Image (tube, rainbow, N blue to C red; front, side, top):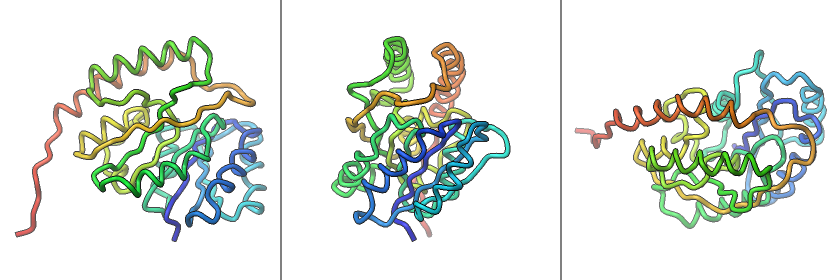
Length: 238
């Protein structure tokens, strides 16, 4: 059984799949027993064919495919549910996250207390357009003020977390953007870790700032409600 499962949600990223797979393997082979779980969110380009062919070259690779598009949070959750590792590393499928950061996150986990269940990537030098960086800055500020999650960057795709702790979280669309607050709601600690961030080499972003802003308004209210309604009594067997 693998110790680590690398979960990668992907939608129409055919040109980025093989380079990212090669980087994951280069970062992890010989370091830890791992698997790679790609979740194809009903791509309409050549991603399914590329993934099918890649399985011959990368024996660590497993491929799941949605029958219809479900979104990034659903893809991540389905990948985590199918994963066999006790810990999960996530990466965005566009190649902007650097798989070379995963061993560093694993080393931090090994040196940290067991109460830390999420190591969240922090893009201190974000390689995106000015409008995206500006929108992200304000969104993070508003979210942090409302949810008090003390996390500077929740939108970074590279994260390391315990599988069991993740599956214990309430599920909803876009939940992947609120993992620090949700983990803290369940009584766990979170650590933000500076990571590398790279420009998109090929393809196009699947989101725009207006779509994210409109969705975030409802999501923030919902997560704030979940936090207010949380109860965590201690439990002991008698």
